Figure (spheres, helix red, strand yellow):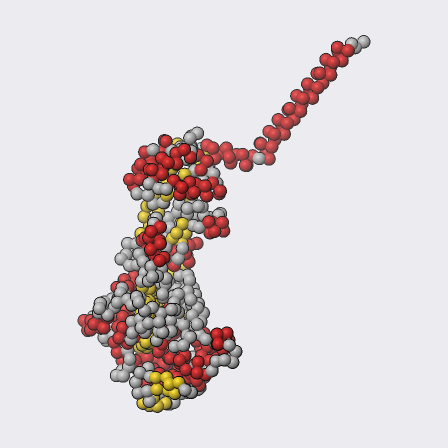
Length: 613
C-alpha cells in the first residue's frame, strides 16, 4: 500500500524529470539553430571578431597618348581608416588632434560607414602626408580600430593639362554608393568627369582582400596563417588615347590668354588629336584631397574653368556655316557652279537691309565661299527653305550629340518649323527669320567639337565620323589590346558638290581675295573657312575651321575664340600653327610671321563683355 508521502515524492520526481527534459530539449533546439540554421550568420560574426578583412585597393589604369607617352600615372597615397565596431569614441578628440581634422567630420564619416558595415574599415582622411602617418602609426596601440591603407592617386608626368578631356576622380557620393554598393565602399574614388568617368568600368580594376588576425582591442596581429586565402587585387586596364600630347601642349600654349576652345581631329578615323578649353584647371588639384576652398574657388570663378567650352557651348558659327548652305543648294539642284549673283554690298528683304562686309560684284558659289560673300548666302537660304536647312544640318551632325567618349556635350540647335512655332507662335514667323541663318547667325548654335567633325567630313569627302579620345584599351592581365570601334556615317553628297565646296575652301587660304590667308602653311596646300560671329552681348566671336594637306588630309581643326573679333586675323593663325606642328613636328622659319597676328597684347580675355551661349 502506497502512502501519501510516497505519492508526493513520485510526483516531484516526475515534475523534475519533465523540467530536465524540457531544458535539454531547449538546449538541443538552440544548439541545432546555432550549429545548422544560423551557422553562416554567426560564423561570419565570429570571424569578424577575430579576423579583419583588409581591402586591397587596385591600381587604377594608366593613360598613354597616341605616341606611347605615359600621360596619366599613379603614385602611392595613404588613407587613415577607422573600423566602427572596434573604435572607442572616447578617443575621437585625440585622433582629431593627430590628424588636425574636425572631430565632427571624423564622427560623421564613422557614422555613415556604420550604416553599411560596423566591421569594415571606413576612410576618414585621404592622402595624408608622411609626418601625419608617422604620428598615427606611433599611437595605434592607444587607438583600437584605427589603421591606415596604402592606396594610389593620379600623377601627371607630362606638362599638359587637358583637364576637360582627362577628367578627374572624386569620392563616391551616397547616391552612387546606393546604386553600386556591391562594387564600391564609402570613401572610394570614382571617375567624375571626362575619360575618368566614361571609362570608369575599365580603369577602376578589381579589389583584393587580405585576411588579418586581430586581438581583442582590434589591433592587427599579422596575416592569417590558416584558413582563408588572400585575394589579390587586379589592376585597372590602360587607355591608349588618340591624343598627341605634344600637340596638346602646343595648342594649350597658343590658347593661354583666350577664352574659347580648339578641337583637332584626324579626319580619317575621328580620333581627337587635341582638345583645348580655356580657361581650364590643373587636374592635379583633384589628385588626393581637394580642399573645400579650392573646390569653392573653381565653382565660383566667373570664367567657369570647369566648363568644357569644346563640347558644352552653343555658339553661332558665323560664316563657317556657309559651306553647309552651299551643300544643301547644290545637292538639291537649286544652284550649280554656273549660278551667279551680283553683290552690291547689301541685301534688302522687305523693310530690312542685311549688310555685307564688302561689295563683291559677280560671284558664283566657289567665289562666294572664297570671299565670304554674305549677300550670296542671304539669297540662297531663301531658295533652300527652313526644312532643307534643318535636314542638311542634321545630316552634318548638328542639332544632336556627337557621341564622343568624354561625357557631357550639347546637342546644339538647328531651327525647324516646329521650333519657330514654339518660340514665335504658329504662323507668326516669316521668311525674314531665315535670312540670317544663311550666314550662320540667328538661332543656330553649334559646339567647336561639332564644327571640327563638320570640317573633317568635308576633308574626307563626305564621311561623318564619331569622335573619340581613346583608340584602344589594354588588359594588363592578359596583355590583350582591344580597338575601339566608332561609327561612320556617309553624308551621301554628290562628289561634285564636295569638290566645289573644297575648292572654295582652298581658295580661302591659298588664293588672293581669300579671307584666310593667315592660315597658310608654308609648303603645304590647305583649306579652310573664317568666321566672325556676331554676339549681341559683346565683341564678335572669332572662328576658323580647316584641314591639311588639301589632297590627303591628316588633320582637321576648329578654333573658336570668344569676343576676339575677326576669325581671319585671330583664329586662323592659331589653327595653321597647330596643323603645321602636327604635320612637321615643329614650326618652320617662315611660319613665324603668323605669331604677330596673336601677340600677347591682343590675346587678352574680354571679361566684361560675355555672350550667353
